[in-house]
Amino acid sequence: MKRLLTLLVAMSAVTTAWSQKQAAVFDHVEPPFWWTGMKNQSLQILLHNSKANVSEYTLSVNYPGVSLTSARKVENPHYLFLTLSISPDTKPGSVPLMFTAGKKKFEYRYELKPKPAASPLPTVNASDVMYLLMPDRFANGDVKNDTVPGMHLAAHRSIAESRHGGDLKGIGDHLDYFQDLGVTALWLNPVLMSNQPLLKITWDGGSMVIDPTYHGYTITDLYQVDPRLGSNEQYRQLIEQCHSRGLKVIKDMVLNHIGTEHWLVKDLPEKDWLHQFPSFTRSNFRGSAMTDPYRSKEDVSKMNEGWFDTDKPDLNQKNPLLATYLIQNSIWWVAYAGLDGIRMDTYPYPDKEFMAVWARTMSEEFPELYLLGEVWISAVPTTAYWQKGMINRDGYQSYLPSVTDFSLQGAIPQALGEQAGYDTGLARLYFLLSQDFIYHDANNLVTFLDNHDLTRFANQVGKDPAKFRMGIAFLLTTRGIPQLYYGTELQMEGDASSHPDIRRDFPGGWKEDKASAFTREGRTKDQNDIFEFTRNLLQWRKHQPVFNGGKLVHYVPENNVYVYFRSKDYHRVMVILNGNEKEIILNTDRFRESMGDAVKAHEVISKRELADLKSITIGPRSAMILELN
Ligand code: CA
Image 1 (cartoon, protein in one colour):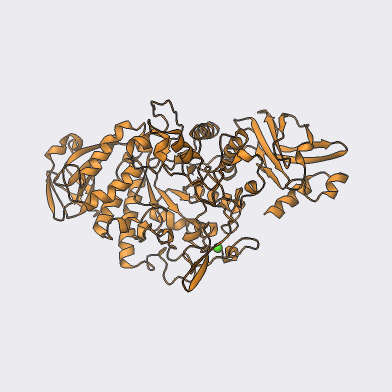
Image 2: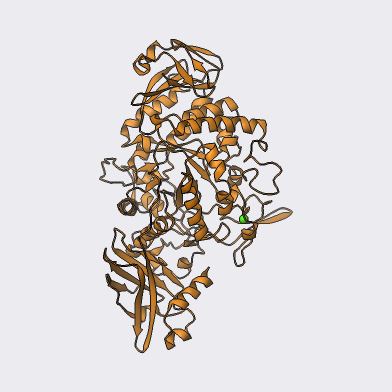
């Protein structure tokens, strides 16, 4: 990739005597190109050559509509940071940047493309269901990219913590599957270059080499898709294909840290682009320190500035050049790929003022763009703190519309597994949701049973299929934007005490797999039962107006039976969860205010018609979803 970039740079440079002698003018020009017609008219361009004094050049620009605001030198002479101002009437084209240092002169042409088209699909909202998948673990569509010369490791499927060869082609090959299942948005774990050295693990009598970056969270180039997954162009095309099928795409991004092998780390523009310590200092992973009224500066700085891991140096977003570099990188990907949304990793870890500027800038540039932040804290007020619209007593204003709901995720398996009491059993769900008053917009939280970091839901509920179904039924009918994790529709198992265990390969994603869970014939009976259960609800949910901004009314659970209603206009859906081991006959008098004059109903799970709603019989440990007529 680097060679290709160098070649392109060399080709676009005018062949002055100087530039002919220099094979490469710059190792890195970032962003590599930009667009006209953007709302933010300012553009910062990073120029880098690891072997030359780039900072000695003065610069001129002669292009209608484009002016040079500044050319800034930094500590490291290998860098120059240009800021251009691009007026709204600027025509697309290649902008000649003239560099001069004494007798040395050369021209670099920087491309301004026509304003890109945004996603044709509406903004992600609670009528969507997201499907999260780990690209390396989903499907291997192209075995040729399993080994890429110059990259650290070939795919090695027999090693759990290694690359397995899944790729973008594999995802694109299964768009029918997503549509058939009924999900409406894909969230892919990070797809950018993540090329860190391998680790050798040894034990008595053996050793093996693992790739600690198969998950994609140790990024070593913020402008390149990892070639083992595909190319930038393939990524762009995959999103285009998804859009043509009504599937939205959400990009997983990380601004808290990069990998030690990132070229920036090896030749830092300024020392303070990273938080550096006399000896390795890890984050305290205490997101609560960011909101705690009694916080010490010590705890906040450990949280914000400590490294996520030895291979993940912590970025200092207080450096203004870095802050702009990171924000522009996000803008570049949305514009380049036509993204529907961004899921931001470790949201409370970077400088929080920076995150507010990031989210505000992204929303200003792309008003339809969906932004989700990972706030892995199981506490309602702490989650609420990070959502846009929340009035925080410390004055912090967040611009993040959507936040992960870890409180609800933790409550679901507890509610299904424990002895029922005043505030335990299904009453736990009732109590938790009763705290929603604190949220600016609880319906814009992302709800989930499991994800790439959590024990799979099957294991959370002791591999009990009845509890599993109740969890799915609740997730897909309560408030919020549901997110499913790949394989949960098959009741895939795995325990988070070993990360690879919760990131097993999707069965059938590899040619050599004995059976393919992508097809009915390839699924076992158990897999197919839960698949059909989930698909039925997802397909029904897609066309149910009550989930698109509909109201939620719930009733205090009695005898471990939880009843709630979703409604919008004349559409009404009644959900009954029975947490008991025995059948219950439910007298519905108490729910009249929500049932209105409904006398019959269609039950979505069994597809039965109910002619009498005065009393409803619900089986042990099960859910009923009634469309009221
Ligand atoms: Ca592959």
